[in-house]
Length: 140
Length: 162
View (spheres, each protein chain N blue to C red):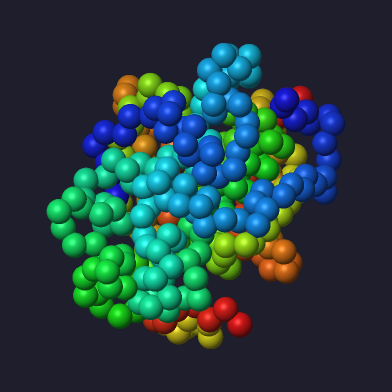
């Protein structure tokens, strides 16, 4: 269902858990689907011994993709016109991620109603992992 | 990374949706997808990143018959220069602009250009070297469908988790 400009307002929020106890297997699935086979995401031996991290960690794009689930659930299918993020902290196996989408501005461009959103995803310790913005087409 | 031919396929979209934890049936069920606003299957918003699968010689995909830097019998298959990240750095930013959403049957090609580079000192990882790249994805009709801007970072040492 598409959002309607008449039914939302600045400050509205949509919050959704987008990963619950993130598994190494899901990270492997992401590697397989995306084609990013960097061993720091799937190879615990390499990551500890060579890369110098305590364990494998998720692709930044997995956290962006998971955050995108909350985004498309909120704005509807095929409605996004822009989506961008910064990866501010790494995501580890066992993390539970909660995405919050907030309405920043409602505007009109060439007769098309648009909503500008802020996007923030945090882990179970309240540490932000992804921070960004998005824009979507909405109905009047 | 430029790609000559990236065919967008329904099965790939399904695998990608599973991997990001998306249960929206528009990515799994063509009959359901016909009942949605786009009137058919589309790809999730970050799907285009999997163009890496179609990039010849992509450095983060093992090449059959050649050594791979991930572990086998030993912790690494090949000697690599030291440095944080282990696999050529970390992803710092990613931005997409959608001119339209991808559908199964699309055949994309991409044109990549390097953007700016800059450096910054960080307490958690030493010297950070950032580099930006812009990728334009065109469809089978030579229309621009997605513009992507990516920022990568090479860290001097692994990021301190404290």
